Structures are given as C-alpha cells and as structure tokens.
Image 1 (cartoon, rainbow, N blue to C red):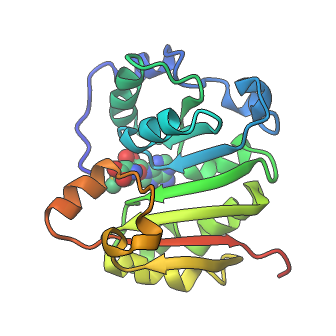
Image 2: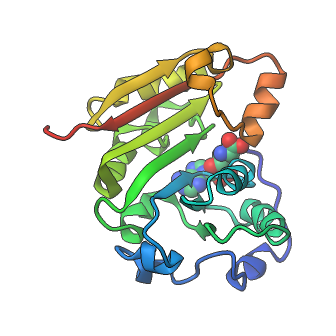
Length: 216
Ligand code: SAM
C-alpha cells in the first residue's frame, strides 16, 4: 500500500476511543474488554477497515479487532467507524510482530489476512504475514480449532504461502485460485478494499483456509 502521510494522524489515533491504547493490559482477557464471551476474530493488516466494518455489522455476535501498523491508514478506518454503531469492533495500532504481547494463548478464534503486503525480495520473506515466522506466532494465539483465512490476487505470494503452511504448524482446509468463481468458497464472501480494486482489473482472487495442526 502506498503510504500518504496524514498530518495529525498520530495524535488523532492516540486520543481515539475506537483504538485500544493500553492493549497489553487486555492480554488473556479480551472478553472482559468486550463484556461478553463471544468468539474473537482479528484482521491483521486491515488497511482502512472496509472488510471488518462490514463483517462486524453482519455478525454482531462475533467480536472483531483490526490490527494496522500505520496511523495514516488507521485514521481512515477510525473516522468511518465514528459514523457507525459497531460495539463489537475495535482497532489496535501495532506491528504484527508484537501480536503475542497483545493476545493470550488460544484467545483468538480466527485470523484474517487480506491482501497482505508481498515483500517480493527473498531476503524479506519473513516479513510476509503468511510466512512460517508469522504462522508460528499465530499458532500461539489461535484456539485449538482456530483458523486462518488468507486472500490475495498475488499468485507468487499465494504459492509462497502454500509452502509455509506445514512448516508453520498448520493444515490446509480448503483453497481456490479463483474465489469469485468458486461457488462453495465464495458463499458469504465479503470483499475487502483491495479485493474490489484488483478484481475490477480482472485479477483472480486466491484464497486458503488453514487450521492449526494439533500434534506436531
Ligand atoms: N486488508 C486490506 C484490504 O484487503 O483491503 C488492506 C491491504 S494493504 C495491501 C496491507 C495493509 O497491511 C497495509 O495497510 C499495511 O500497513 C498493513 N500491514 C502490513 N504489514 C503489517 C504488519 N506487520 N503489521 C500490521 N499491519 C501491517
């Protein structure tokens, strides 16, 4: 994502009630933060939050947390959310490398990775969110039947992600190289901002769903 600096974004985010400021204090007790025992789903690299806002409106009995590392991006999601009534959605400004400091073991039921940055240079492979280095972190915070759903139009990134599943401690549940023409996997699909953009250009959308391998 090309980053355009938004003046005042840091201050805006730091004082917003839609962004959890003291996120480390909720580690292991996010259900208390939401005031219920509903499942918790997170999107890592949520961008401007279009996908999560639609998910939260569609599924009020699921708690959603959006993770984004840039305040100039997150501010757009916060400003949109201010106009909506979505008590089951909140945001955190962090880099995903910190994820295990924010959530306790097995606290999360689903992780969405949508159109993650490809980091095309081989030496940057560990920065890719579906890399084994990140999958190992995600294993810790996911519940035993927790799943990761990953979508991208970048075939090279998808092929890389495929190879990372087993070393990262996961098993394949389902995949497609053409989500929008896969009747079964496309049921209930909520499009992300990037998904709208890239499918309008004619790009096919790849998706996998993986689950934690229990005995490794
Ligand atoms: N998920 C959105 C969508 O599908 O429309 C946005 C996709 S955009 C290409 C990727 C986003 O992930 C960017 O906003 C970027 O800042 C964020 N991101 C990338 N790496 C991240 C990391 N390590 N931690 C948190 N956010 C990250």
